[in-house]
Image (tube, rainbow, N blue to C red; front, top):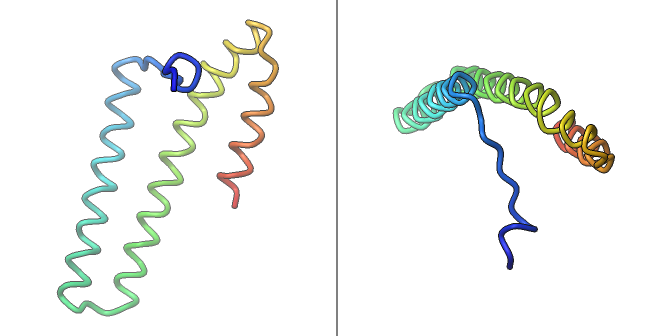
Length: 98
């Protein structure tokens, strides 16, 4: 497979990169915490509460990443005449809203 036609990349500003990385590190810590809770035979509702917090953190991550994607990638593609970016965005939104 040729990498130029199948793999797209996005250079992120340092502040955006650090924010997303910080969010993912926090989520990773939460997941490890849930694993430990399971290993310690913690009460189901306590684990479910933590899983709900992880879901919220992932949704927040998605919102930040999606907003940046729209403001940069989608806008740039539309300006360049690549209107298929709108179809890609709609398909992405459909996946996120399942």
